[in-house]
Image 1 (cartoon, rainbow, N blue to C red):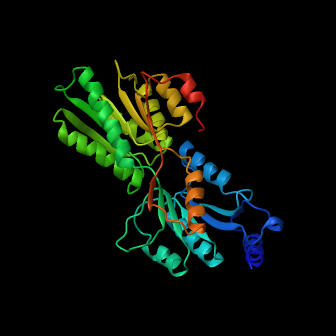
Image 2: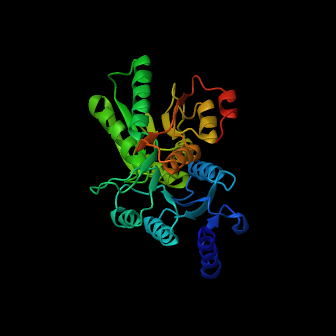
Image 3: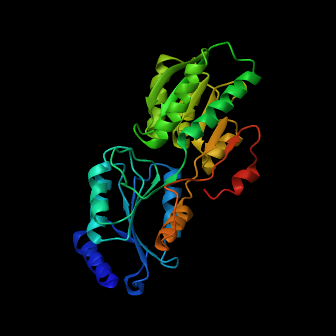
Length: 330
């Protein structure tokens, strides 16, 4: 039955021109393979590419899977369309990284009625409807933000800057995404607790280098009195740094602008080694093995935790080494 389903799927792909990507050849498919439909939000950053590759490299035929992949190109409508197609194809599991937290009730109810388990990765979803997804695998984004602001608090204390004004520019990620919500909440709460911390600008960089460069340039037209730039991913940090340096500002925590970032990609850490990024909080994209573990447990009818946070760390410009960067997988 599974072979017939896969034949039908592949014929549909051939004649309709859909951009499905099967990680298994048709000839080798058999009833033991687990069929997974994966809707990725896009490829907006190095982090996202690493996340996609981790899942593709894990959910292989050799590991017992057939994977159908869809790139939503940053459009929620494309993800909803892809999930509906997966339901129609009667896949065994649906895996997706949502663009934003809301707006999923209707399509996930369809998956629930079809008895297809849904695993949410990277970004969380919020809903008043119970049981729309089976498991979430990703980061604790509020905890990441707390790590960043506690480091900043400690660093400013060491510099004896506990009373003088600290002017902070905040470049947010995609508004409504879990990463943006958590990292923003941590910063805003820290600002409210420190009377001398002043949020002088807060704009959306949409997790991209180009957008962050644009908004940072716009902010610099109004003020160059900036002490801290808090960027919600490495792409934004690189774009902001480019704009800051073009405006004649130095990015260095000791005698310039303190840049804080998230993700800890290889390029972001190189900037950290050069002290252009003061602190880089890891957001681990290597989630494929976690997905595999959850699915295999479900296949064996074993209990799972509904929320699974991935392991993460942090890097600061005073302790990072080239060796730390060289051993990274992304």
